[in-house]
Structure formats: C-alpha cells, structure tokens
Amino acid sequence: MATHATMPARRRTRPSTPAHHGHGPLSWAMPLVLGVILGFWAFFIKRDGGATTDGQIWLGVVSGVAFAALCYALVRVRWSLPRELRAAAYGVLTGGAVGFLYSLHGNSVLASGLLGLVLAIGMTCTMFYAYYTREN
Image (cartoon, rainbow, N blue to C red; front, side):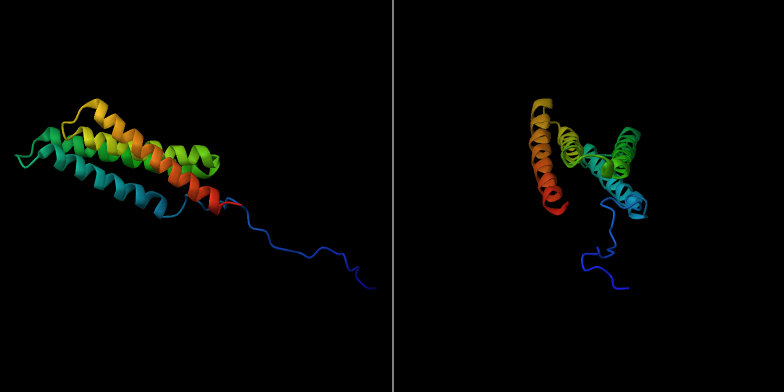
C-alpha cells in the first residue's frame, strides 16, 4: 500500500528550554568565581593600601557570598522568566554590584545610585537585545 504524499514527516523537535539548563558545573562555578572577584575587589577598595583589619575581611567575605548567592539564584530561575524580566534581573544585579563597589570608594549615595542605575539600564537593554535576537 502506498503512502499518501501529504503524510507529515517525523521531525525531532528540541524543547526551547532544555531541562539541563542551570544544572551543570558551570551553574555553580561561575557564580562562585564572580563572588570571589567581587569579594576581593570590595576588600581591596576598603583596604586602600592600609593595614588589613577584620572588618575589611568580613566585608569582602559577606559581599562575595551575597553576590554569589544572588548570581546562583538567577542562574537557577532564568529560563522560567520571560525575556524582559530576565534581562531586568541581570541589569539589577549588575547595577547593584557596581553601585555598591562605587560607594565603597567614599562616593555619595546619590552618585553610587546614579552610576548603578545607568549601568543597570545599559545591561538590561543589552541582555534584552541578546535574548530577543537569539530566541525563537
């Protein structure tokens, strides 16, 4: 018996958000590395060439752990968010981190907040563009 010409072909489809996203070793290694970098950066900004104190060490450790935890949480939930919210989350994380580091230099809250806001808007636009052009 002959097969009809309009018979649909079997095609393998790939899910748009694979189940393995956010579960590999890079999902915890990258936030860990970024947290260590931010922690050391905060420590060295606050140290300013002087003697090392316990407060400076704790500032670096706590800020690095907090940033790494936020990065890890974002990596775990990023594929469940719509692209606009995902881009905004990366913008808020970047702007907050840079604003915090800028405030450690002794700059005002207004200057630190403004720099963080500008960078958050820039990162949000960049990530939205990247997601918008590469999805679907």
